[in-house]
Amino acid sequence: MPASSPNSNNGSSNGSSQGSRRIKLTLEYDGTEYVGWQVQKNGPSVQGTVAGALETMTGVGVGLAGASRTDSGVHALCQCAAFTTVSQIPVEGFKAGLNSLLPEDIVVTEAVEVPASFDPRRDSKGKVYLYRVLNREIRSPLLRRSSWFVRWPLDITRMRAAAVHFIGRKDFTSFRAAGSDAPHSVREITALEVYDRSDETPGLIEFEVRGTAFLRHMVRIVAGTLVAVGAGSIEPDEVERIIEAQDRSVAPETAPPGGLCLVHIEY
Image 1 (cartoon, rainbow, N blue to C red):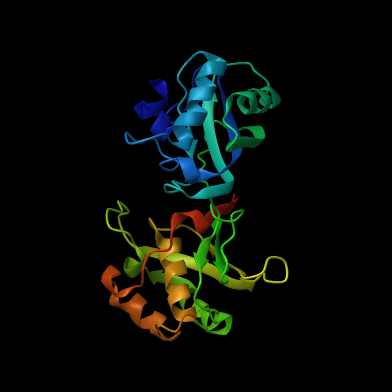
Image 2: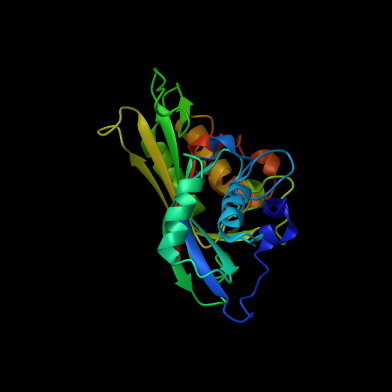
């Protein structure tokens, strides 16, 4: 199918053909039922689902490039994607048409025309992720798909003390999943905040992570490490040792995907 063709993976159309246009989409989705953003053989992807809807609208396969390869089960409030088309459908028509075709767990919040050279991944200046932990004795049916339910008590002061050790440009090999195809593990985290949202939702804790780019599972391993610190399994200052080790085996478990959401991409 065109939705799973190589072009749907890399957005290779360059906008050079006469009359072509480059369209940028902003997408919100619940990633629970998908294998992730990127087209894969083992199940439905967000990329493939949107590309399939675009093909229905335009009558041809469309190369759809995304800003972030969110993992299986990960959500997005603000994923950006772009495609090139010769269709003369107005941008608002793309927004309305896609939303009439897409399933309820994916929606286009904005569609705009951009320069032909626009690349949603390479042109990104930074990304913001939010990881949510529900820390209380009773689980929440309403938050089960969008948070990590942790019964044991977590100390927010300890987690905030640990968070400062992640900030800066560092080698995050210890926070890189096996199978990552990144050429190196040096990344920069520009901010990491630990928020107590219990006044709004009892037991809710949020980790807001800002950076220029991230490794596969990096934010989820950071979240798992903060929870381990909050539980008293490791000391806040041990984060420095884990980073310096450049060894995934010394870092705590990877947090579940459902708690993670891509909330903003800076251009």
